[in-house]
Structures are given as structure tokens and as C-alpha cells.
View 1: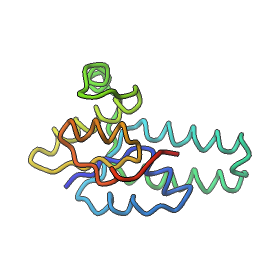
View 2 (view 1 turned 180 degrees about the horizontal axis):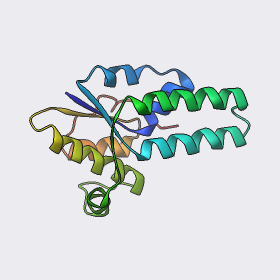
View 3 (view 1 turned 120 degrees about the vertical axis):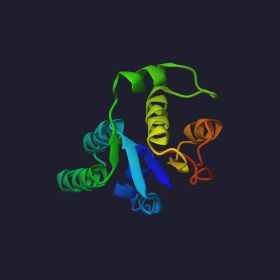
Length: 145
């Protein structure tokens, strides 16, 4: 089993203590897009500027994000991934989610015969992931940070 994690799951873990990320780490491989780092850091910085995190909270969040990210098999946004993300998808999907799902498709190719689970709290991303044939264990959850 391969777990592909999007940013919403890491942010809920880091900022709210949500334990769904532990389910992903139970897989033989836990993967993400390099976009996860960028999105996570942008959210952390935005929360600091909005006054939701103080300097200490920001430092702790960055440390936890880095620890998560370093434990993932990271798929880079290379030309093939970008072309896949720019192409057609079976459902309406935003640009960043298309990049995540293009990376998930790459992960599925790297591990043929393995079940790929997409961990996301984004309903539209989950819908598209299921249309692509992936399982979405967090499908009943709502919203994203």
C-alpha cells in the first residue's frame, strides 16, 4: 500500500494535532509532491502575519513540517508532472490539486500493483482521485485548512 499525502493532512497534523497522518505512515511508502513544502510554509507564514501564530509557534510549526516532509518520498515538479497536471482530468480540479494528483499518478506508476491511497481533506481533490482509480480514506472529512 502506498499513501500519497496532500498539504491539508500535514497542516491539520501540525496545527491541530489531527492523527490522520499516522494512517498514512502505516503504508509501506508515504509520498507527497514537493508542492507540499511550499504550500505548508506559505500557510505557516500567513498564519504568523495574521497573528494566529507567534514566533515560537511558527518555529515549532516549521520544525514539524520539516520533520514530516523529510520522511516522505518526494515527487518533484518536473516537466512530465507539469504536463500531466496541465492535461485533462476526469473531474473539475484546481491547479495545485492537479499538480498533487499528477505526482500521485507518478507514484502509482513507480509502484505497479500496489494500492495507492490519496490522503486529503479537500473534497474536490478526493472526487478526482477516486475518478482516477485511487482510494481516498479521508473522503468523509470536510474542508481544508
